[in-house]
Every structure is written in C-alpha cells, then in structure tokens.
Image (cartoon, rainbow, N blue to C red):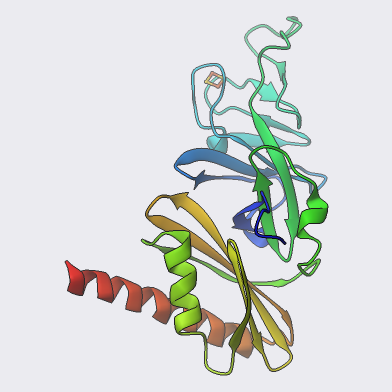
Length: 223
Ligand code: FES
C-alpha cells in the first residue's frame, strides 16, 4: 500500500459474518458494513433514503438488505428494489443509498470513499488471522505512534505507511491498520500471519489491552 492509498480499514473481516450488518464511523460519517449471503462485503452510507433509519439496524436477506423501519429493500448496488407498502410499484432509480468501493485483504474490510482499485492493497497478505480491534481516544497517527513506541516484546516495526504499521516477530507478521473514526478517536484493526497459534494470539490480545490501558491512564493523568 502506498502513502497515497485511498483505502480505509473499517472492520475485521470476521466481525462481519455472512448475512449480518454493523454500523461504524469513518471521519465522523456513519457507515454500514454488511455481508450478503454470497459472502461479498459492502460499505454504504448508514442511512435509509426513506426516513433516515440506520441501515445497520436492517436485515440481510440473500443479496438484499431491508430497512428495519418500513422494510424497503435495497440490492447490492444500493438501489431500492421493493417497497412493501406499494408491492406493485416500479421503484424510481433515484431511490438509492450512496455506496463505496469495498474489499477485503489481510483479514480486514477496507473501503475507499472515492472509488479505488483493490490492487492498491496487493502488498498486504491476502488473508490473515484476526487478533482484535482496539478503540483509542487518539488520532490515527498518535495511535500508531503509541504502537511503534511500545511494540509487543519480540516484535519490531518494519514498515510504517500511512494508516498502517507492520510488526515483525519470529515467523510472525502483525498488521495494524488504523481507522479514523473521528478527529480524536481511532480503531486499530490487528491481524496476524505466519505462526498463528492460539497462545500467540492471546499474547497479542493482552499486549493490545495493556496498550489501551496505558493510553487511557496517560489521559487521566493529563486531565
Ligand atoms: S426509513 Fe427505511 S424504509 Fe422507512
């Protein structure tokens, strides 16, 4: 991934199971991440064009997602295809949820606000095992600096591109991808490739929890 990459991490792949949806924030904007029953992932504006209900509260049915409020159904392009109160209506093309480019790489769901080529992510491993997502009251840059300042014992930062840090351990590579939820809050999505035994992942989860506790402790001291 280059420093000009438009891709933003929004979730661990394993957190968006087939047939489910979840809401998230990207630069203060509400987004829904959902996975259709074929397994494809989608990232949209989290707002139904009808009366503004969050689409993340909706239900995935096959390759459609239905709004919780009045049941309007949208296909994977965001186009509304069915309105239960008017079952014979040919739904106008203008009733559409804004959508974004979405893909998966290294065990993470990525979105590109202005469209992008998924090949931009080709330097990352194709798949990876999830560790956890970590939420910190820091900007993405400050959150990644906290990681490189105190990596897990036995790991060293080998690469630091915009929005990601890679930590190299013994036969293990850890990717940490930072999601800007808003100006002062980041989510770090952490995945691992290589020797991914349960004990190793448990150690990484402990390290991440300690990192969060340390950051929160520093904030309390500074207050
Ligand atoms: S608000 Fe979504 S269908 Fe009415």
